[in-house]
Image (cartoon, rainbow, N blue to C red; front, side, top):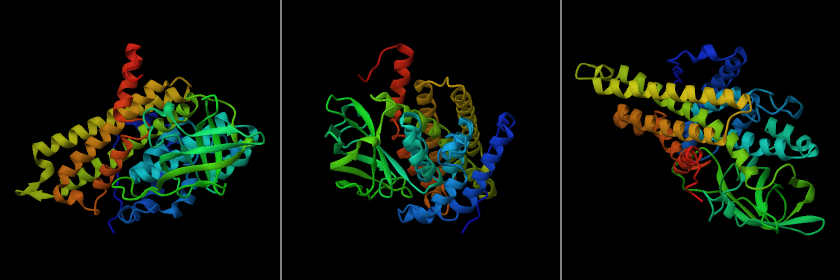
Length: 392
């Protein structure tokens, strides 16, 4: 097993902008990834299995709801700390970061923001500790980029709600204890419901044969006349803006996370280029390889600055959905391009599991699609700057 020799690039001295708390959070996450993720992740990706034993470690480094207040079990950290944790985890693997993103932004966030005090006290501490794991049900078989067309519905039956429908491409669903599910009521209004494993008619079949996010558990959510207690409705916000608010938080985390994957690919390619000798000298001495590496570090640095400024805006409550879309789209696109270029530098070795690059590349093909596709985020920016929505 190869040792984890990762060294994070910081070409513009961004460390000087971080607080001591930020650095402590980062160092704890980085050490955990080196110790608990790097030695096992290739094996789990090859066998397409989620390493359940890492859940405890994710909780211990504060990856579950880091910005949730301590009174509900969270770490009470700021948004930059959240981003840094996602960056470090995705440096290890996008699928592992997906697990943390879903738990934090798509399960804990809506319960904290839209839930009752009783719901917060019941679920958040157990979610923060990893005692409970959650998933988020928005995407459906017939509705991806247009979630407003969802067909999952619930009826008021007097003492409970009756839920019917299906969700697809749901991270964590095969092992989740609870699901935050978005469905339309009889008037066609979208609401969030907390559905618990064990409720009759609720099943979570796993999705197999993935070439991407192979170390992440993906599945469906099936609701066949599921009786949901009325106290499980999230009353704080309804309409499509409610789930989209959750997605903003997740997309923000992805904008940092993708940088981690890019840094790992760049660092791997840089080390390899210095060590690999052809025509009597390291391939790092050749102009075309230097061009690749120089462009990689330039794009990583630009993405770091974009994410850091977005984090400041998030901390101030000023970040817009369109700004978050821009960062998610740019940074994931950047990471995928870097993964492809890094693979070129490694030649044939780049496709093997001895190095992380091909795994990152395959993972990023999912990341560039989920939480809003590459094209949809471009159109969100277009709508923001022109005032005209091209997708309505």
